[in-house]
Image (cartoon, helix red, strand yellow):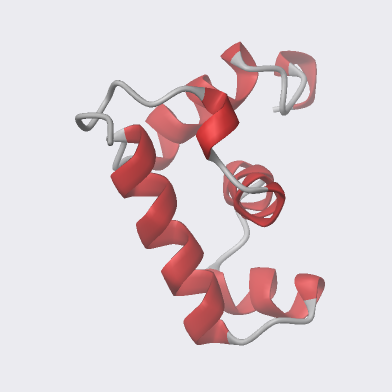
Amino acid sequence: PHAAGNADAHELSAREIEVLVLITKGLINKEIADKLNISLTTVITHRKNIVEKLGIKSVSGLTIYAVMHGYIDADRI
């Protein structure tokens, strides 16, 4: 296991990446759940896992991470 903040992009699951992208678009947990057709509890679990794996707690920090790893285009923020 990696220490917090040392994780690389490959440790996020495909679903966690989907959740990450929707977080960066400003969606709240309920909206993410509706869009991905998953439960609110599942979204919260994914968010918790993303924070634990990346060691990034803020939405702005997650957005920077997503841009740097090519998950979102900086021009579309």
